[in-house]
Length: 199
Ligand code: ADP
Image (cartoon, rainbow, N blue to C red; front, side, top):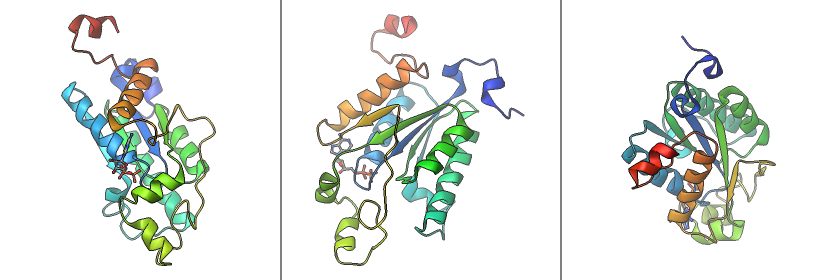
C-alpha cells in the first residue's frame, strides 16, 4: 500500500494530480472542470470529477454551511481526491472551498496539488447567478451565501488565477491545460503526434 505518492518511483505524469478549482458560486469552476475532464478522457487520461454540489448530495449529505461543516466537506473531498490521485488519476475538484486553511490542509495531504482560483468579479457571478443562489440571498433566504453573507478567502499563491469575465471557456480550459503541462503533470496534448513525444 502506498501511503505517500512521493515514495514511488513513478513519474509525476503517472502519479496523478489534483486540480482544485476554488471560487464563488457562478465563477465557472464546474464548467471549466467538466470541459477539461472531457478533454483529458479523450486524451486517454483516467479522470474523476469531484463536484462540490454532487459531493454534498452523497459523501457530505447532511452537512450545512457553518465554517465547521464547510471545512469538513473540503476535508472529505481532499481525502477522496488523494486516494484517487495516488493511483494515477487526474482528479478535478470543483468546490467553493472558501477557507484558506482547509485548502492548505488539502494541499498538504495531497502533495500533487494545483490550485486554480476561478475569479471573475463578484458582480459577474451575481449577474450570472447560474443556480439562483444570489437571488435567494437578496431575498434573505440564504444568509450564508459565500461572497455575500459568508467570507471567501482568496488564495495568496494559487498555481493559476482565471478571470472568467475576460476569457471564454475554451481559453480558460487551455490555461489550465498549459499549467499542467508546465508543472509536468501532463504531456502536451496536440494533434501533432510528434509534439506529444517531444513534450
Ligand atoms: P461554479 O461551478 O463556479 O458555481 P458554473 O460553472 O456552474 O460556476 O457556472 C459558470 C457560468 O459562467 C456558466 O454559465 C458558464 O457558461 C459561464 N461562463 C462564462 N465564461 C466562462 C469561462 N471563461 N469559464 C467558465 N464559465 C464561464
